[in-house]
Length: 160
Image (cartoon, rainbow, N blue to C red):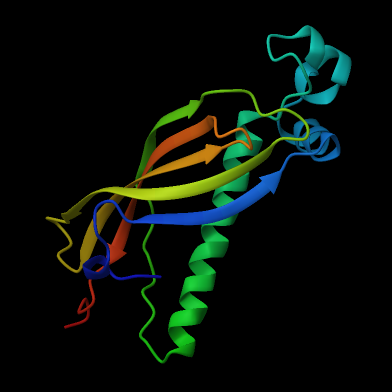
């Protein structure tokens, strides 16, 4: 993971992609969002979605999994180079969560994160605050998911 000083507005991270199969959509929905259009192909076809649709919470959960995995990969690479690894703090939340288009069985969503703003923390000078636009795009290039997330990021000399 990067330190606050290493981050610039406009930096983009490609987080990876995920294919939403009918089996995975139904499994997630059965446990967390048991609405008919997430559980049954015919109900999905009859819905506004026109097919078996992944829960928006499923789409968001996959984003989070890929974001964390990318951070772990970056940390491992930095450690292998002998660099100090930045351990990010908690997130005070997110805004503007949007499920723009349905994610249907068979869709592959590619996720990315782009830095939109940076600011110093007034109360905790050893931290910076980063906001990033996180998005998911389907195999047709259509934006299907978006949110603006905020995170506390340590400054390089936070212990000094």
